[in-house]
Length: 344
Image 1: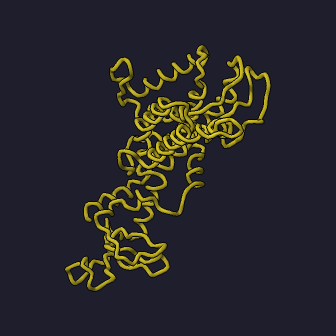
Image 2: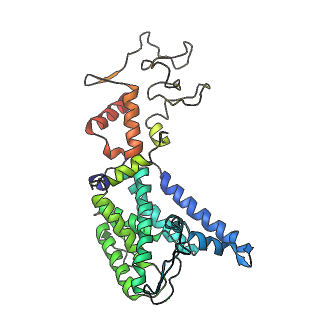
Image 3: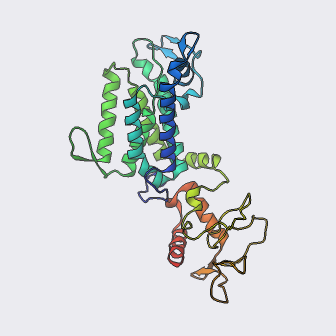
């Protein structure tokens, strides 16, 4: 829970962190493509949009109160794809607005990879809950389920546990309510609606998303489940956020960039591929380079408390930020970054 609940932010910058931005773009693009294109094309007299719903919305496996069971229309990928389909403009708008409002700080705090895994798992858990819990309270044929609301409720739960005292203005009261109370109120409303309402809304899917979020936050790290998934989906390629950390004002492209190269944290140009011998810090490749230090003797390296801080050490720290978030750095690693930021 410490990894999830640490309120100190990472280095995912910007008004729209990368995962939030990608999720919003995908959801909006799918909605526009469906509304403006697919619904006007037909196959066998049926709009193509209906085929999309048939294949990618979450199809029920039970009808009524477990009256019959069928996997004829259900496919495993629907547990992911149903999260990107929406039934109307307002359905899409409120889901994406809530994703941005509550998910932005979570992605910055947890790191993009962990936030994306958490988001998708909450959506999958919401879908499973809809498949196996909603039939207990159904009175007729179960409709297909669409929308990101289950995952959004997981994000809402994560926000409430990560920032429990953050004030939120709740419509229509317009008075500040602590985030933890806000989450409890919404969960209570959904629970009551799930037992009483016959409005076609997947209330138990919403609760399922929040429940999965709670389990991930409480036990995801203790059971090593979340670290395992992060390693499973980790990429050798460094993220731009980590690669550019502290570096954007100091690097320039010499025009000789080759495949497999990456920017050095210290040097004023791109490094050669890793199979070449490492160069000393501040070493300048071109004697006539405009960025050559004016002093005749270049320093051999940077030392912090007697330890030489090498390029490899910096790469390891940046990789750790990219994969696990800034909050998971050790105090020693954070101190190294702080000292380097003062010297560059």
